[in-house]
Image 1 (cartoon, protein in one colour):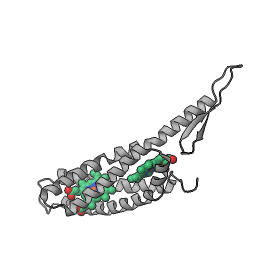
Image 2 (cartoon, rainbow, N blue to C red):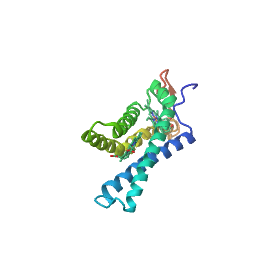
Image 3 (cartoon, helix red, strand yellow):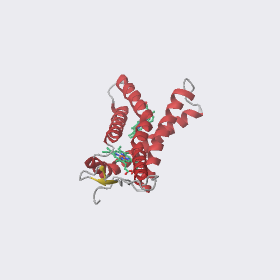
Image 4 (spheres, rainbow, N blue to C red):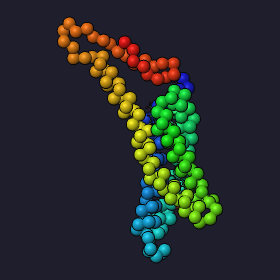
Length: 182
Ligand code: HEM
Ligand code: HEM
């Protein structure tokens, strides 16, 4: 349907996954280095350099992630919103990105150490849980596929000769939802 392309192209989806994985891996790697490997060690230690570069890489990945977000903001989100598809997990995705952007900004500009520490912990908590929200969001496709398989089985039952067959099919309503019709 023109102007209602919810489904991303395979290339666009691959790009989204690469960007989201980069932002996640660099964030987790920084946390492991900062709170694990480098904890209490001398600043001139080689791993501190890796930690610094990891944060730089994370900053770059975060900017790219916001560009990726812009790319779904153009068509994917307004189309799915209008069709009311995958709304709950979609809104959770939006909330997670908004929280990461706001707490990321606060990491630079929070007034005072305690506000910065608060922003840092919140940022890490939301970032850490990010993949769970994404997996929930992607589960929609699996649910659709499962529903389609179920309907296919109903359309072609293992019928015994002489049993009347009921044929069901999925038809989109005016709101884009799918409905079962005989
Ligand atoms: C940060 C925001 C979001 C990101 C990064 C995002 C990303 C994605 C990705 C990567 C997919 C899998 C590709 C695909 O199936 O086409 C997807 C699927 C989907 N998303 Fe989102 N999404 C976001 C927000 C939303 C919102 C707010 C909604 C609903 C209003 C939504 C509705 C959907 C639907 C319906 C699908 C399944 C499309 C299909 O397979 O046909 N998304 N999303
Ligand atoms: C849209 C996604 C994200 C954006 C826009 C974003 C943004 C930022 C920004 C601007 C910083 C400050 C960089 C600096 O101090 O040089 C930062 C730091 C950080 N981010 Fe992210 N980030 C995102 C996702 C994530 C994810 C998924 C994780 C995974 C856990 C994560 C973990 C971290 C960590 C651990 C830090 C360092 C915290 C600190 O300095 O106390 N971020 N992020």
